Image 1 (cartoon, rainbow, N blue to C red):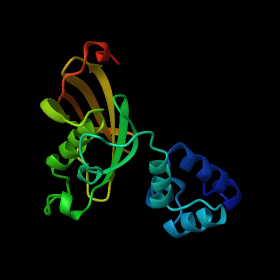
Image 2: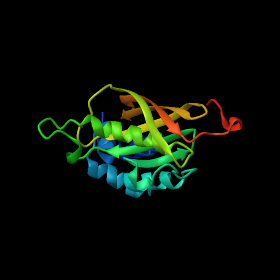
Image 3: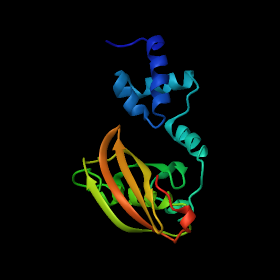
Length: 192
């Protein structure tokens, strides 16, 4: 059963508040209306398009990346607290996929996760020493990958970072990265 505009708009606002990265296409599919209808609803409610919502979230970042220039991070970092957690998004475009199948090449998912594992390190030097990764599900052109990194442990010269990547809350990639960092003093050694 189709919802009226009066019924749909509060639900639409709630969905966007729950997930500011949700696209108009995904919302249109969920509410079984056209993309144009979703755009008109957003305009009436003064809700910006997804790109603007992402930029707004990105401006609320706590920290800035130290270990590499921000433009070298694969994907767009939207949240970061050094030595704690980080989130990035990557929109899968035609140049990320195999032309015959439209399925994303694995090295793009790995690069997003690995560069996020580097970005999370609160040090000028961070290098990947070891990675254990699993590609859980295929990712297709046009999908948005949200990678979430979390520091699991910090020792004298290594940091263990866990990264899970999702498309629409479905796990598509997971990895554990052992990151080399410059030696810390004994007082700085901790566990997350």
